[in-house]
Image: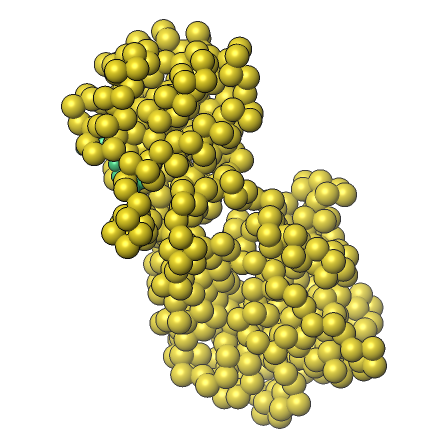
Length: 524
Ligand SMILES: NC(=O)C1=CN([C@@H]2O[C@H](COP(=O)(O)OP(=O)(O)OC[C@H]3O[C@@H](n4cnc5c(N)ncnc54)[C@H](OP(=O)(O)O)[C@@H]3O)[C@@H](O)[C@H]2O)[C@@H](O)CC1
Ligand SMILES: [K+]
């Protein structure tokens, strides 16, 4: 499913109006009707009393349509207006006039105390305060009212987006309504799906408000959910070489976990031959954990990391490989960091860079910018900040645009890790992954991801698709593990162990997971 910015959503509304002749009033009516239907399905129109809290823009206008539908079905409803009704324009103004003429109980609220006095008499709150027009921090009476809504403990239905969430970034603009259910219009906005905004929706519904498919499938919208695709079957006569050979250049004294998790995850996710080039001194210890891995012991520096003198060997050895994975647990030792840069620059193979490899790239990004073969990077927000020389706060405040910029500047496919990881391509496409859970933020989890993407590359031979499906499967493995053992104490080893089951589940259920947006967005 496509995910839109606020500006793109406005553009879509305009296209619906100008190209398809759907009047603005009809769009608002559709929005209000879809919201009403979800409310009717969830609550008891005979018993429950509904408080519709309206701001002065079109989001408030949608709220007035909901109020009218409820009123017309003889539910007990009260509208509160937080802004002077003379501010309503267009369709919102029309709906205000209708509400007045129908004598739907309506009250203007000057301050938060008046609001709090009203609140106890109602069972359900409909939040139509701000939608995509929110353009500044929420303060004053609005702040206090949102706080009162959140403290009330009553079920809240948000119209389009929980009020206070920035539609483009998902950031909380000071304070935001914590909803139980959100009905969003046209397509989900970035702010509905980016964290923390996503957490404020409660259950998220999308209605197309009678947009033509041409509008919501617009190819110019380059952000979308990371939907699963069908995986090719493993041929019955598959031999281990068929399922790919990859080389991991990873590990240093004291960093034995990262190379193991990465190289082993490749095998657990269906990869064929996993070669691990790692300092001689640690190879045998790792081999005890992962005997299926094939070792290429390397010369080490004094501190036990990979020495630069291995460069020619690594380049030569990788000639026969489909992908070279560089960085997990490689250390920040200066000589090793230089080796990584030289290897990345000189290797004509597809590469995946993670962990300490990303630090090497951040110091001199030129080592990857001009590569001809595909480059995949998998930074967490801190590593992304280093790659672009900006702060973590700047990364998190605008993850989609920061990622887009990084992919272009670094000429790489990049996974920006974190809740709802994003996968970006230099051509501007961004995919938002919906699988995974907070329990997966654990040491070694990223190394498991690295091996999973490599295995998908061996299977699919397409770097973007492999990265997307690798991220999806990694999240799915974490979700399957969490289903059994909970999220607390989930370890990288648990994610690793669940990769085969994740693949099996994926092969059986990829279509449902796609059609149901992994259970996170329902189309109504
Ligand atoms: N055809 C369409 O377009 C369709 C649109 N639809 C609906 O329209 C919504 C977008 O409507 P919108 O653009 O009117 O803005 P909206 O979100 O109601 O809020 C703006 C109001 O809030 C105010 N304000 C802003 N920030 C503030 C703050 N921090 N603190 C205080 N006030 C603040 C600002 O007023 P200001 O004070 O800036 O003059 C303005 O009054 C969209 O989310 C969807 O629900 C559907 O009906 C389907 C068809
Ligand atoms: K809202």
